Amino acid sequence: MKIKQFIIRLIKRLFRGKTLTDTKTVSNFSETREVFSEPLREVKPPTNPTTTSPPDSEKTKKKSHSVKCPYCNSKEVIKRGRRKTKYEVRQLFYCKHCQKTFTQQKVKGYSYPLKVILDGISFYNTGWTLEESCNLLKEKFGLDVKPSTLSDWVKEFKELCSYTRMRDFGLKLFSANQAIQCIKLYHRQVFEFKYHRAKIALILQDFKHSKFEPLREFLDLVSVECPHQLFLEGLRISELKIPFDLSEVVFRRKHNFACRIADLVLQAVNDNKLRHSAIQNFMIANDSVTVACEVPVYLREEDIEHMQENLGFLIPIKLTNLLKEQQKQSNNTTLQPVITGHIDILQVRNGAIHILDYKPQAKKEKPVEQLTLYAIALSRLTGLRLYEFKCAWFDEEDYFEFYPLHVIYKLRKKQEKENPLQIKLPIMEDSYDLQI
Image (tube, rainbow, N blue to C red):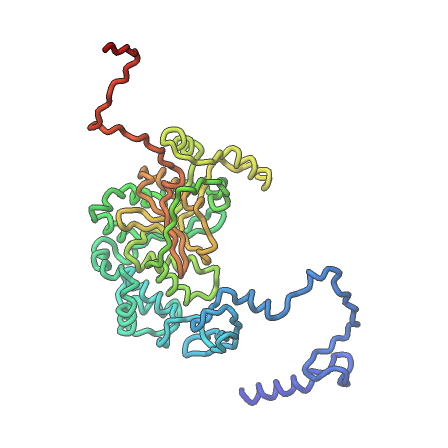
């Protein structure tokens, strides 16, 4: 077979400079360049100099702007071939600043691909045994992984997979098939709603989280009573631009557990479109606080009016006006006065409900309006106070957190109270003449 392939390549090289119509070689062109029988056309230069194509150096910068050199943090990075390992092919990058070659994967020393390792840990923490998890890996990737190897992976990544200590208690409540409920929601596009029933049952046993029982009741009913028609005809929360007053809102910047998980998981993702789902799948199966992903929420016009009139919330939204503008732009008359959305990640920890959204460039993003409306909608659907919610957006480097209550409710300036210990002298209105 190798000799046959070599002969075929040799024949192609010999006849590469010949056309189908003429067997004579063309001396004006090199042998490695293709010859076309069509007549050549003159290409006029562009009249506008700004429309010229950028040089190759600018193109490479645009393509690899998200890749940084791990040695000098430079963005002057270009692709430089590939490295073939036992089970995968990895992309190599070259840094023009420090002149070093590297790969994007920081986790090294494993013969198996990182995606296989993370999926194996997720299978095990879901409730499957080591042998069953290895069988699932073989069905998915076609690789034979030994149970002892998977056990070593679980021990090495135990720090980031905090659900490992709760796994045995969760198996007493739900089996591996029943622990995580997965449902596909066809709301204009496909959303995969995931709900960890064993995890939320264990979290609510804590005294400070027992008040969040309405949240579990709401998540239990998503698969049964979700109004799918509203999500097909309502306005999208992520597409709205609402002028909230952010003057008294404090944003706290951190680098916490979510950033570390995102940094680990994204090393195994080659397609940018799969980043959200990869982070969600790993967090729902392995951390100890994520209870649901892609949670559908909605707000009606009467809900917003109730919060504005009865609770005194400053929500600058009029759905009727938004609906008219959207109908003019899209020429769609079937839209209803309701706004809908899907929460990326829902967590319960430290006595509060956390609404998280992954943003690839968290420093440049500020989805305060979107996360605030998510919190308002979930508060209205569960009956829980907005005081119990926190919102945040994050990437692998930064985590930004704020209270949604501070966005829509402003404290009034209190009048200074009089000191009861201070004696007030009466003011005499009438004047008397003093006689000596």
